[in-house]
Length: 221
Image (cartoon, rainbow, N blue to C red; front, side, top):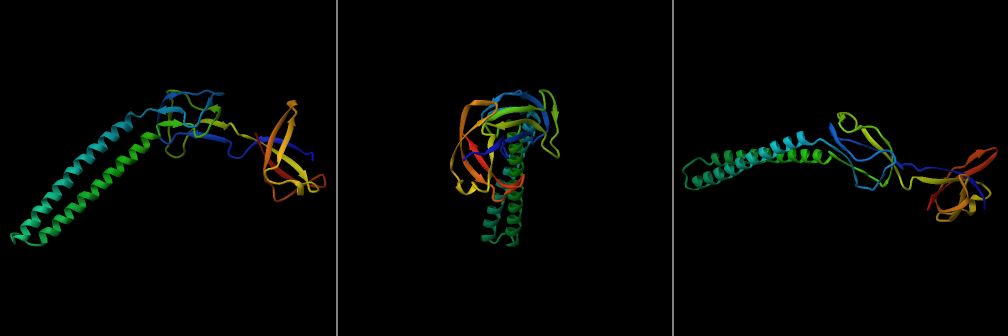
């Protein structure tokens, strides 16, 4: 069976990588045409301000931990006094409320510190896929603002970006099945033969010059 088609980028093959935090770009490790591996560091944002905030948050956690420890000691002391009937029983409930309040403040402080830790991780921008850098839209020393949308640093096109879309007419489509092996050639390299396999068949046909054709998506190997 013979069919014509086009080679085009697959959906999701192009990924725009941005920053989720604002700051100065202190390091940019790629240029247009660079090949990157998934997880490779593309850029770094100045993290000194966030590091200072993290230190303050951890100090706050330490202070409140002491408050919790004191509240527990005070609660235990009052419970012993109540057992000896030296203070009113209502004092125990007051100390329990004090302890619960301190523990709630400690939990909030720890969550605040965790948020800063997450923001710190965002200062290192890594490649989400393996591919080739198609564009770079920032430079070292520039300030990026991520208050509303993540500004794009680089655009990466994945190594498996291309797929073949063949147009198969209605008289032949019945012989096409998922996983079928395919060989094809392209005008740019007429002497070479490439291979692939059928990965998807359009459920709805398209009428072209009075003939119903179905798009058959072929993964290129």
